[in-house]
Amino acid sequence: QVQVEESGGGLVPVGGSLRLSCKASGRFDHPYTMAWFRQAPGMQREFVAANRRSGENTYYSDSVKGRFFMARDGAENAVYLEMNSLTAEDTAVYFCAANRRLVISALRDSSNYHYWGRGTQVTVSS
Image (cartoon, rainbow, N blue to C red):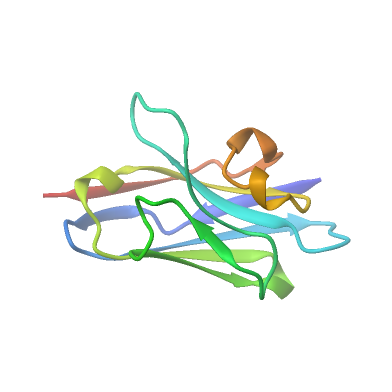
């Protein structure tokens, strides 16, 4: 069984920065694919970023590329999401997800992830 837990959400002004953390705990026989998704009120869950293992490429959605950066502590199956230049459109509940290694084409589809955290609210105020 794998447990996923996020932390670090909060209220931040437009143009500000925020750092989210996520750790997956449990029994792992290899590094898991880790990802961030977000869901705004009334909207579908949206892909933000994903990484298959430490040292490999990280993939971002076009809406956050260049502003958000995902880092990974591979030894701990922990990931961090550094969010910069935040806008009101970034307001959402942010979810961390984990799964056994996924192929690159599967990274952006939330249905491919088996383990999820409860989410952390990020509110960007103008």
